[in-house]
Image (cartoon, rainbow, N blue to C red; front, side):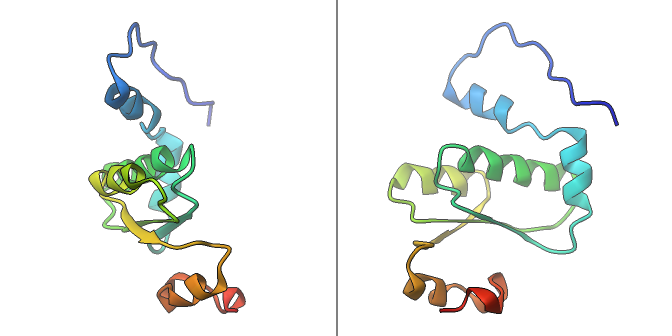
Length: 117
């Protein structure tokens, strides 16, 4: 498959327009996520790229016609980030991934037994 091409955009109107452009899934992303057997959990979704990646995954599942859930796990120290994820239909789970007590509170079906403290 040839590399994805991105159409030229003469002007980015605002932050929401930029987020829409950045989270547009490529055909390859849609095809890849369509092959997943279950839901998708993204760790550290509160970081710089996390919200955009989560939104892209949600859009790719939707374009593929897949009824999958996208979970975003992070500390969500900035309230805005969790709100952005929720607005993009990404289910948020607040968790400090460096804290074993937090990991133990995650739903068991989300993590493998190798993560248990």
